[in-house]
Length: 114
Length: 112
Image 1: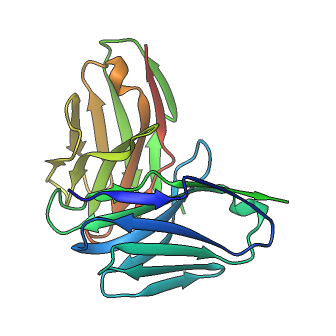
Image 2: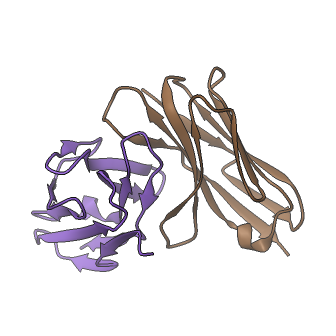
Image 3: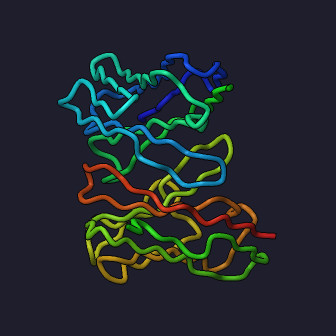
């Protein structure tokens, strides 16, 4: 059974720091991996989608990498800002199982202090 | 630029009452999903619809039913609400089952 783990569970950094969020998964047979952002009391906003054949994706100050063989992904945030404060969720989509089912980690709660 | 729209945003039910959560997407996506989010449990799939006219159970389907009314709309029904169904419910859609997902803003449901 696929399990997705995100470390750390919470992170507090001063504004301007570069930071890395980690995601690991136990079954490497995935279609893709997606990073989301969730603000308190809000829905999920898709940040980056990495297909299984890709190694990384970039959007602005965000860069996500995927190492399928080791079951790891990282989300790199450059020059962090207070507006980046949110919970970041990693999710993988497996071969097999319920078609289309995203398996989510429990998230990393990021706080960027001014 | 609505994306995925869910109604209502908040709801309080008494145990045993029924209700339907509505979801509509305007992106012409084929696949739609219902998730619930609980503290400490993360997001879990309740039901999904890979295409218009089809629905399938996810990880936690007990106590729920769904209807894929047309390509745009996918509703979730609680026939007899229980306190264990207190949760935040999210609807999502994707162009295909292996594409990126777009989520709605959620429905906060409390069953007392």
